[in-house]
Amino acid sequence: MMKALVTGGAGFIGSHIVDRLLTDGAEVVVLDNFSTGKRGNLSAHDKLKIVEGDVGDAATVNRLAQGVAWIFHQAAVASVPATIDDPVGSHQTNYVGTLNVLEAARKQGVSRVMFAASAAAYGDLPEIPKTETMAVKPLSPYAVDKLASEYICRVYYQLFGVETVCLRYFNVFGPRQDPSSPYSGVISVFTDRVSRGEAPTIFGDGEQTRDFVFVADVVEANIKAATVAGIGGETFNIATHHQTSLNELLRQVCRIYGQDNLTAGYAEPRAGDIKHSLADIGKAKSVLQWQPQTDLARGLEVLIAQLKT
Image 1: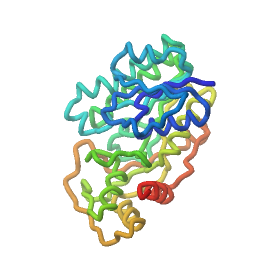
Image 2: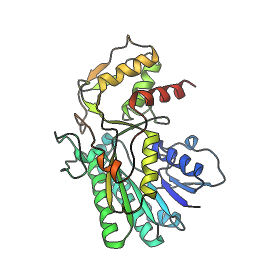
Image 3: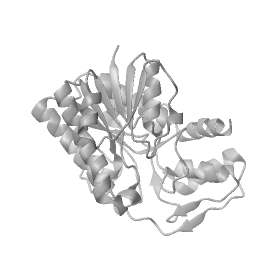
Image 4: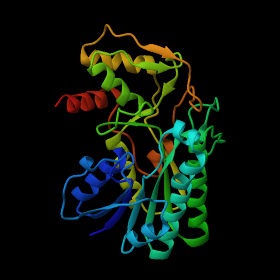
């Protein structure tokens, strides 16, 4: 059976990857500093080892990579505003952490590294849909570090033969997303506020669009990235190729909760936010052999049903 290391494995996406790996029979090591991850996201399992530590600590990452076949590198300071407030500190996690993972993979002979890249690399370039070969225009320290991490992943593949696969996540949503942060995923914030009968705040006019992808589909993309042959050094968009405005998103959430009377408040756009986002997922379909199975409407129903339990 495979052994995997999941950095940020107590977080939103990471914990779902852990669940899937354990279900598939893998032995899993989680590295998380619990700055945003939660122990409650992980269930006790005889094949699961949880280590509290930081991906910015090279020695810890190297030690945990021993005997590992796959590394799913999910650890990050995921808040764009937080990276604007502290670009140096977030760089230590978002870029240096990636470098530590790659160096550990090289030293320990890890078969493949799956990196959680970001659609933030595209910035506010007007061309849509976004394709993996188009120009990039990062607008925040977060986006710069994620893009630089993609580049160093490719370099480690080209120079050292460390197989890397970069998955550019668009707007991921689903259970375990933490609504307590004002910078959490917008769906998590909307469902939290609407469930309490409160009108959420939309930054901007609400006509900005996002390409929302359900977390279970993101997990499947990671498994494909680990197992499909001949994709070392590649980058893939992980999304649905469907645009939804934040105003329409709020209408859907209100409908499910029976709160059609709620009206959003509006505030100034936040620094680093982009206007429109839409992915071309043709490469993921043809090369990664992946495509999303859950549309936004169904994903919202599943999420809200779980939140109500």
